[in-house]
Amino acid sequence: MRVQCKCHGVSGSCEMKTCWRAMPSFGDVGSELKEKFDGATEVEEKKVGSRKQLTPRNPLFKLHADDDLVYLQASPDFCEPDPKTGSLGTHGRLCNKTSKAIDGCDLLCCGRGFNTQHRRVVERCMCKFHWCCYKQVRPCSFLNSSRFMPVSGRSRWIITCISRDKSLGHNVRLNIVMVKPAFMETL
Image (cartoon, rainbow, N blue to C red; front, top):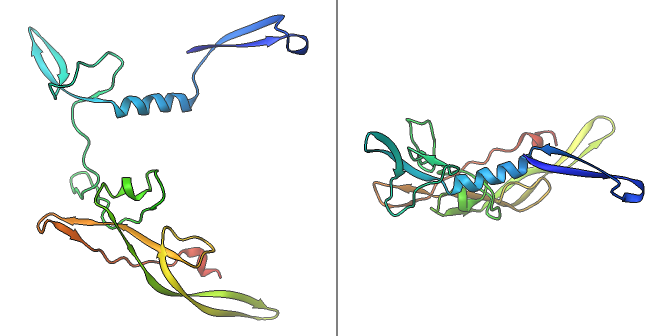
């Protein structure tokens, strides 16, 4: 909780001041939690004398403070398929090459790299409704190589995460089939 104040008076003068305790904004709380999450320490229970104590699993780390986040088990690896957790991994997922957010190739592909595939695609375009009663549609051909399909663009990029075949020890190229978005069906 923090103290917030507001002044009351003629032309902004502070003849009277009202103060109250207020919660921080959700953004501030979220930023603080994210910072603590990024700096969380893996710990284990150790018996010290007659009581148990949480100590860092890595002896090079310092002891945690009371307001630090700690965890007993590492999170599962969501990059690789894991039937126990239901994770399908990120192999072959579409990613955004230019984004630094969660949909970005750098984060989503878990450092394995990504493929860009180019394809020639024919879709309906230049649709025109003629009164009354038919619609004229021409096929348009363009190079498909999409960084997520723009609604009105001609060039499209398919960027997918590379799959690592553990048994062979090398990258495997995945074939991706693009499905036409539902909004294209209405044209």
